[in-house]
Length: 395
View 1 (cartoon, rainbow, N blue to C red):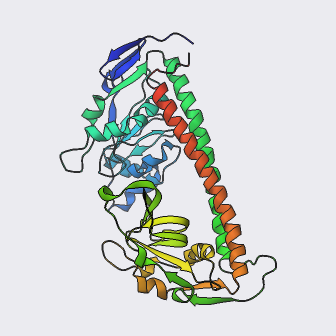
View 2 (spheres, one colour):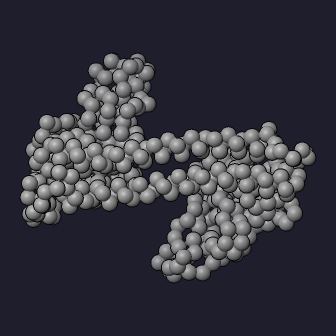
View 3 (cartoon, rainbow, N blue to C red):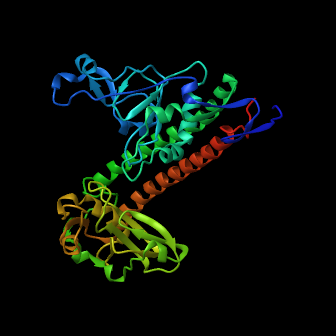
């Protein structure tokens, strides 16, 4: 390790042998385009065409879109070499300012700016640096109350901190990429575990597969016959009026805050009443203990000796909620509609509990892996801030 001396720059303290430079000082930026969607001859060819929504995949090895040679020639998009740093340019959503890097040749739509590779900077290092600048990129492109957007000019003038030594840039990138690989491996494993659990749910919650020792017939019930609804205990509280504490405060799609006090204490199922963020995989969660619930989630509990609450948190997922939603704007699941829905359940509490235990063990394993992934991501964020400012040196 070398002793590091620091110098003051417009971006803060950096090592004396590092520099601050504008992207336009070492490379150029090109943007893409979209062929006319009204001409079928322009689409489904052999040329990879990337949509800005795919920036969230970060390391781009493949994209969904394909255009033809005619489509490519008709638009002002550009075929990009590998290792361009891709930046989301437009929109109020999360895409604007998102960074990715392509590992295959492709072209893009007009909402992506491609920073071309340069011999003066390692592409992986630049990608990681731009990825760390997400909030800054959004800030400089926020606009005046409109949609906001990054431009080629803004990006060319965006300042980058980098080691003068390409070798050190590569070492920084390799260290952070090693952590990224661990996260990717965990994501793959989590995906496989989720698929296995989904398959188990499809079989166990429909009686296509029975657990050993259970052979009594199942029955169809309406929710009102097997559940008690505790919506009357809900209390919505504006964010600025909540007293902070350690009790989870639930809304339609999960925990929104942690507060002092509670509205419910026990085993419950929470289902979105209005504002569900996914109508296909409807927001349903099993909770236990003290909770605070606002008026955007229904609160159910299995009736004693009729339905196990934890089992129902899985069994209710077999219902098609999307076709029972009302409202043209904010989708709503009315209380009466919910209580009139039908669900097939085992006739014995014992079988319900046994199925719930199997599925809960699977869910716990996935949760453990998710927690491990979150820790890796937190470590990566800490490393990124240290490595990209030269506070930790790898040479």
